[in-house]
Image (tube, rainbow, N blue to C red; front, side, top):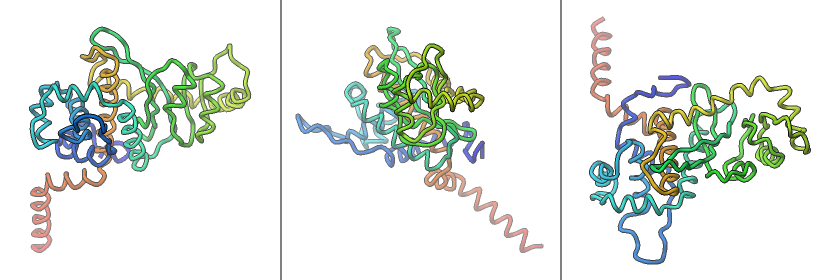
Length: 298
């Protein structure tokens, strides 16, 4: 086992197709189809599953058609159909999926503090798509729990991405806004946000300044929350083969979900343990027989 009881990042179980699909099926919420027009031939949840698996395996649309669609849906799904849903799925549904998986991770992995930060990825035409991510920092691991698109407003982005919690809530100087402090307090956190020298008014800000003056050394740990962005860039690159903003954002969300699923599998919870036992059943039986034989001889 790795740090904090997690399986190592290089464990081969992370590539198990059946385990990945079953983990996603159990966690992705139901999505109701539109009543207008002809209903989709497959549940929309299956199309979303294929889109996430495509990013999980860094595959193309055609590879998703040939390698994943029949395994998920029981029949081949054309790559143009997968691309249609990738363009038209509601991003808010994927944001909800990230929150659901994040809450599951919170049950399995305790956290020390939370960090909010923003990043952006560029499309084929170098148009950037940004988002704000709330990450939990635990002992030896970092996992995202909530996300929202960048609207270039600290108050709106904090309000849309924050979820109730406890402990310190860290952010850089961009979040040094009186409304942000109010939102952080209302959600049960203690704000530890880097202060801007030109800003000093506001009751919530003055209250937070006193906390920062006493605990500013802990703020140095904020960079640990940015490791998720580095992991996403290392795994998938910082440029997406898309042209429009919505598909770019949807692929970013799919990559965040893929990152969460990897952490979830590494916890070794439930189905993961069963899959490991089944995969190594013969070795376990042979080892048990060897131990029993040696004990009976002695």
